[in-house]
Structure formats: structure tokens, C-alpha cells
Length: 193
Image 1 (tube, helix red, strand yellow):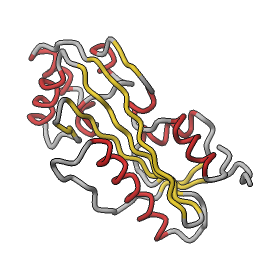
Image 2: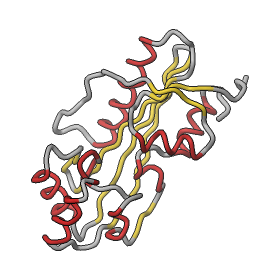
Image 3: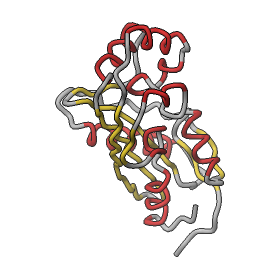
């Protein structure tokens, strides 16, 4: 049975995720999750992203009494065996950008949808290539402030686009929410987006 098109709850304060849901005409409310995120070393990026998305969605679902579907997401950037979260400061952002410079890396976004007591999860991987960046380019980019609240210290939809010659996979995944996969999870849950 497919539910009529309606509202869902986004378990994230991310403006990028909100913009992506608005892009596809999705009605939603935002409830921030207070779930403790998995940050263990030795955990695969796929597992980390999926588990954190599940924790966020289930945390909000446990506190919400509206019965609306709850969508959680978590994005991590990985190069080789190193997982890159959001930079702690400008020095950390520079370290991340130097690590990504001139290399291919992967962006993983875990998505979780909680509805009527069931949890549906998935993870999407996208390969991203970044040009070699000089120290001057890295410093100038950090000075814009854009890297500071982004996994991997860059925003593909922002200024950093000039450093990214190629993406293989979902663009919206790199921004922070793989829209096609969100639609597929909703469909599994019997929800029309």
C-alpha cells in the first residue's frame, strides 16, 4: 500500500540536505538528532555511514509522536583507509585537502528511513577525482570558510567544483543525500515521494 504524498521528518540540520529534498519537491520538517555517532577506527566507511544514519533516524523516531517517516543520513569521505569527517579547524581542513589533492577518493552516504517501526537502510558510494592543489589554492579555499562544516573539507556544489574534474556516481550523494536512493527506500517503505 502506498501512502499518499505527504510530509516526512529529516533527522538533520544540514542545509544541503534540506535543499536537496526541496529540489525534488519533498515536504519535510527538521528535527535534529542527538544520537551518538559511531567514530571507531577500523570500521569501514560504508558501515560507519549506514550505522550513523540509522542511529540518527531511530533517535528522532523515538522522540517523535507524529507517526511521520523519519529520514536520517550520514556522509563520510574516505581516501585509501583514512576516513575524513568534518575538519576540527583550518589546520585540519588543510591536512584533509592535501591528502585529497591530485587523487581519487570516495564519498559514502548512509541513508535510513524509519516508518511504522521498521528501519530501511542503504549506502551509496561515489568516486570523486580532485586536481592537484597548490598550498596557495588550499589556503585561499580555506579562507572562504566553505570547507569548515563539510566532510572531507570541501563542497562539490560550491567553490571546490573548480578542483573536481570528474565524478563517477551520484552527484547528490557527494552533496550529502543520494536522492535516487532516498526515493528507493521510500518506495520500499510504501511511501510516495
